[in-house]
Amino acid sequence: MTAVDAYPWLKALHVACALLFVGGVVANGLLLAAGRAAPDRVAPLAAALLRWDRRVTMPALLGVWALGLGLAVTGGWFAAGWLQAKLVLAVLLSAIHGLQSGRIRRLGRGDGAAPPRVSALIVPALVAIAVLAVIKP
Image 1 (tube, rainbow, N blue to C red):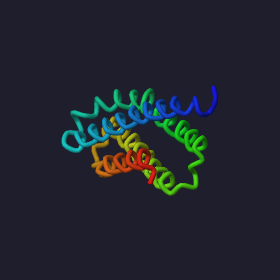
Image 2 (cartoon, one colour):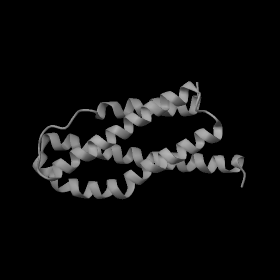
Image 3 (cartoon, rainbow, N blue to C red):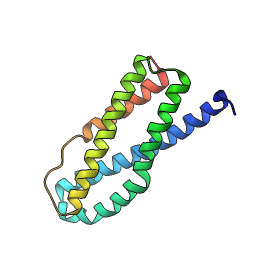
């Protein structure tokens, strides 16, 4: 299989991993939002979500990065401004996921302190990443 033949498969796997990762980040954000209102009622769900996070969301994040970097190498796009902007947003989403995971661990231990409010950045970052990836301005 040549690089040209592999490109659509890399892209499809990258998108699939991105969808799984985004689903996990959104689920984390919803649990944390519910935890602000009723930490005692949400704490038991934290362990289940952490298992999901370790088994699905984190491997999907690693897949997004590995496949995305592979696509960037294949396309020769590292000097492109759109890719650099997309990478900044991808690092931001990765950091948000890390903050969420830590907060969910603390919530599961019974620490009901208010989580950082970074969830508002998720949707705009995802929209910007999609536009940058498809339009490649």
